[in-house]
Amino acid sequence: LAFPTFTADARVGGVFLPFDIGISFMRLPNMTFDNITFDYLTIGGSLRYAILQDKVLIPAVSVGMGFMYNKGFVQVKVEDTAYVRSDFKTTSIFFEAQVSKKILFLVPFLGFRGVIAESTNSWKWAYNATFDGYGTIGQVKKGTVSRGFGDRFHPQVFGGIGFDIFMFHANLSASYDFVSSIWGANLGLRFQM
Image (cartoon, rainbow, N blue to C red):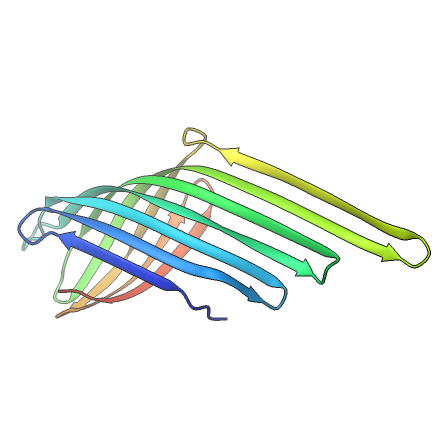
């Protein structure tokens, strides 16, 4: 399935100064597909500082920090008789260090990241059933689970390879979260000036 989203990423800096600042935004508007309704929003920003510049025998080394805010919901409804809904909201702060080396047009990279997050997840389900001659029964249940910034630290490792050809840049990367044992992958394409 493909869903229409609006995304924007911008990064500025790194030309005369050894740092850059980036912002990102993604919006999946409130949509209904069959009996499933969902909504998603991400806003983020980061700051990176180059400790070492890429030279003939020296790799590039950078450190950075940033934040990410995500919120949304998913709801499944069965006609007017039952539904279940989950709402989520997470604010993450991360710190990272990365090493990379440009070899012709290839840029292999490896890094480590530490993430702390504050999150609130709420859920609700309800049903109503009518039985001929017996009346209507129904029930509603709901709850919320929250975690603070100090509840858990997530160390992560990431790496991959970038392809730089003039103003075209592509990268293929993977990441692993040691606490949740979750793998991630990314394929990115962009034009840069």
